[in-house]
Image (cartoon, rainbow, N blue to C red; front, top):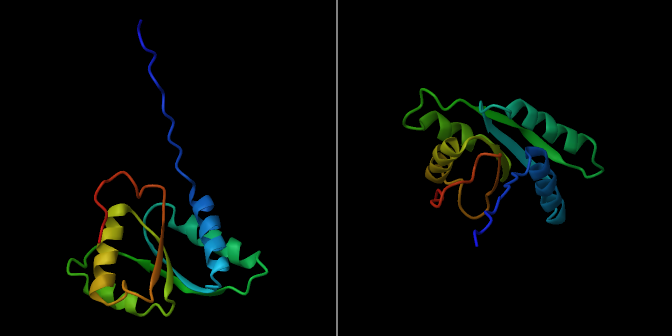
Length: 136
């Protein structure tokens, strides 16, 4: 007999859903101070707006320490990127970018000493999966 094929439907969680879960984790650990780091990746303005909606409509005393929007072009050595990442005062960072940009950002963060113990990064996006190899 001929076997029937299986159909798999893969649903990615929306950026909003990811942020809701992240804010639940932040609340659970009482991590109320955070900063937002984005690139010019499509959707970054909506990401920033939704973070503001979540914090403004909450009874939690969130300490939103600003938004850093990175432009990764014309910085092949990552010098400007390292300097900009060092200027972020929060140890908790919500990052919105593409997978390729995340690799460059984490390389710069590691070089700047911002990727070790004491720094917590939440990477948000619908396009970050799909690879067996994860960035360091």
